[in-house]
Image (spheres, rainbow, N blue to C red):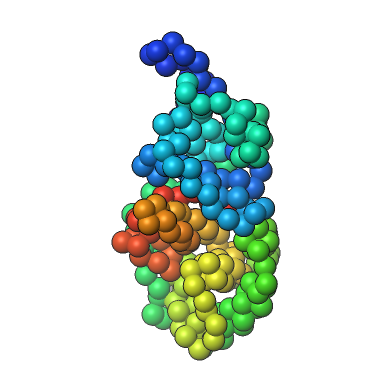
Length: 225
């Protein structure tokens, strides 16, 4: 992680630090910096900006000696540094969750109903609205269930429910299914460049849920929900 307290470089020129603006997320991919603007519902690529913009997963942005914090603030990308803007980072994934093959018809039926409900919620919402919905999972007061059991029930039901959609919809639905059993999973958004691509997946600690290590390793995390 970048140390925001660093004030000088070997050249003696000063550096400064700011925070990512609310609803704005950044990450460095090789020499480029990718920006996700939830309000605009779009990604931006700042080519070669990695030489002077150094974003950290917690939302802190260190500006190198050849950059100007005022430029980022004027663009609405950054604000003066504030501890209230600190964010969580995802762990490097090392495992994949294996669904339990032993799920009852009742569990699969429950999962199917959850999938239908989540599909309805997903429709006609912007990414910002989906993120806001996802961080407020319903309360759960039932018996405890393992993530492998819930994932197994989801896998057993999802093929019977039409309209599963692409990664955004799949991850949103599965996150809500897990939350319905009191299981929190991080919703990780990642990007790549040349060619540009965006992907999202779920993680429980360092364990990928509903995706593969081979696929998610191609992306640099930019936002964790």
